[in-house]
Image (cartoon, rainbow, N blue to C red; front, top):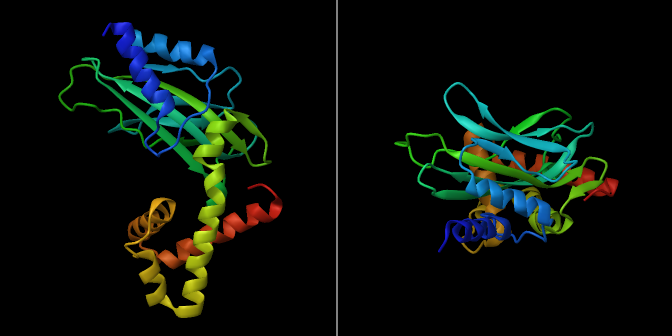
Length: 237
């Protein structure tokens, strides 16, 4: 396979399959061309190739020890949800695509104007590398706190919007189980080995966050449920 053919294959994988299990919608040809061109030019350390007018940007940040990619809200409105992708290429041409999404409907805040949030996309492909990896990144979808949207609506729907009702329903069942049957029943539901898909992900995140924050999982579930119900009542969901 030629270099261009290999790059096209990698970019096709990046643009059609994300690690969180969604399919991206149709992407504008200009953005696809930029991503393809950047995969053939390893001279740049970072290339930001979102469509023109994107309300958020991506960039490499340093915290003194590690470097990471962060999304920056460059708009004048709070961001309620977003989908972004990156592709990292090392000096040997090895690539690693990464999809990232965030939904603040289940949080107590939004990504405010001019605020940043790190993406869970590692930059180091090989700790023994002699050259820092090159990174290509793009913001694909944004929903603002007023309900308006920017970008690829199909991607946003599949990655975030379609999942909200199921998340809300499961959180509601968790909280109701705790209220009606107590902590043991709540824990049994949270650790049910029959949980699958989105419900399993929610349970894992609740348990992981509870351990990290040293906070009861029920308290986190209640906060997430209250936040989501507030957005739902406002008609933005």
